Image 1: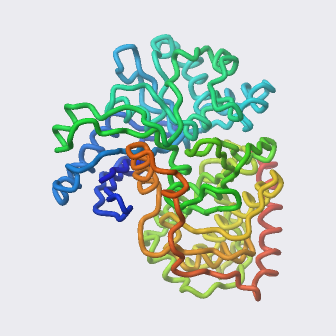
Image 2 (image 1 turned 90 degrees about the horizontal axis):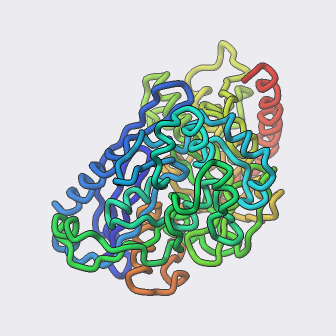
Length: 484
């Protein structure tokens, strides 16, 4: 058996698979996000450990015999989080999360140093780790001087599991400190933020052995000795391993809290000016590109909170048959945007409202706004040299057939729906645990799921969608000129 632990923004998920990659059981535990000031987003790392204990306990309650047979554990987690610990491995402050934008001034300052884009292949986004640590240095100097190690969220989990300070290439590529082409920390970039290589975790590939489960935890969970913990991956690379998106030309669209258009690459293809992320993949000698939008299902959940109707009820009002855009446009920049704008200060808007703009019209506009933001990512990936002909849809938002039809039409390409099963980050993490424990060939393990159904573009509406997308594109500079 093999265990995948996925540290998400809203929950920890523990997934147990067998040697044939069949899902045996799943355990969950909820997490909350603290927002003490506008633009801030934090979590207490201790809550991750508690939630992991709860998720594994749920698995143990239902599958204790199978859990006892675990030989490998893989880790996945939300990227970019600045988890600062002292020499005694104590947390110095709450983790600053991926969607926290307080460090926009520090990000701009680091991005003005040409070494960052040249070595990392990426813009220094406010959500990345380096500017957050620079913010701590500037605003909480008493905390900064006590920093012994900077860990990414899943690697804090690893420290608790194994006692090791290690990270994988895919997650580390999102810090703004990694020389992404060389797959190594850059001493020069670390020095620019007042840090040294010694304050960073060691680097491994996602498929490598990266520690052994502590005997105390193994006994508590009913596991045997010498359980291998894999290097693991950042959440999007882990999802790609779960989806089998590991070879050139393969791509997926993820409709989770954030939205991602992810393409695997056989070579390193940076184009930072497009705000495309060029990161290492979780598999050796493999890279990937991502367009990332900060609010996907988060936008629908916001609309749900405003209207008092569940997200499922809201999308049900639209039915499954795609409609032409109504003329109401929604810009989903509720917490700023990454691809293609790199703008932490911009905020969302409804444009074109009229007396006839009832709730379903606004819901349709919210879905279309996210769809058009994903189309922005496609255009950015194209400009960086990536060719995509079809995508597979994952994430909670992919349950809406209407949304998938909207995406297929806006991207003008088929959207595949995987056969029943959970092929997300927890599954990908479990696959990495299997590879690390057995030495199996990564490409033979990380295969794509069968396609249950394909959603084709609605050709009769591609023209209307193209017009609506043009309107959407014109609105960002307009609202930016008003100060966001």
